[in-house]
Length: 313
Image (cartoon, rainbow, N blue to C red):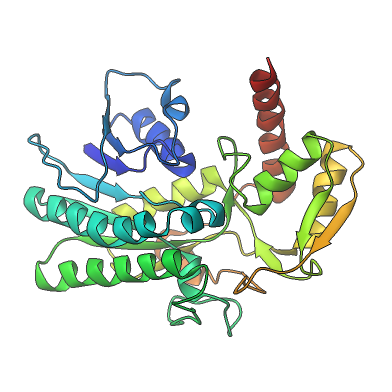
C-alpha cells in the first residue's frame, strides 16, 4: 500500500514509518519539523520513503493514489503544546480537516492518533472508551486536550456524513528510543536528569500514577487497529500502573546512578491517575503489550546514553 504518516518524523511517527517500510509499504511522511526531526528518519531506506516538509494546517494535494493515512501530527508534550498553543489547536482542527479531505478524495482509510488526555483528570478508573472525560478547556492543558477532542469529533463527522473509513486510537503514555530528552515528559525527563548528574524532579508528592507502554507495542497496536473493522475509539496503552515515585526509584535502580528526588508543586490539571482499560483492544485485536517496563526502560536508557555521548562529541 501507499501510506501517508503525518508527524512521521516524530518519536512515534518514525517508529511507525520504520515498521511500515519493513512490511514493504511505500510511505509518504508529511512533517513541518516543529517538534519532529529528520534525524529520526535518516537510517531508513529511501527507495520507498518520500519526505514532504509541509504544515498540514495548510492544504496539500497528492496526485498518486493513497490507501491509508495515519494522522499523528501534533505537538504532544506539555512543554511543546504550552509553547505552541495556537499551532496545536490548528493542527487538531485544520490539520485533521485537511487530512480527512485527502482521505475522502483518495477513498483512503484514516486513523487518528488521539490521546488519553481526552479523559482529562479522570473521575473513573481505569479509563474506558465510553468515559467522556473531565477536561478543563481553559486550563494550561486545554489547547492539547481540546484539539484532540475536536479531532475525534470531526473524524466521526466525516465517517458519518461523507462515509470516510476512519479509526480512532487513544494513546496512553508511550516511551522508547528517539524521545526528545528535553520534551518535559516524565520518562525522558528522568533519564536526561540522571545521566546529567542532576536531581530527579517529582511534581507533587509522587503518588500520582502513570501506565507506560513501549513504543513497539504501540506501533503494533496502531497497525492492528487500522486493519480491523471497528470505527469507534480504542485505547492503546499498558495497563500496568506505577506511581511516579516508584518510577523514579526504578530509573535509579536500572542506571545504577545515585540521585536525589526533589519535590515540586503539582502543575494545574495534572492527572492524578492514568491507566487504560484495554478490554476493547484485547477483544478486537487480541492485542496485549509484550514489553515489560524494565526491559523497555533498559532499551531506552541504552539509547539515551549513546545519544548523550554523540551530542557531547
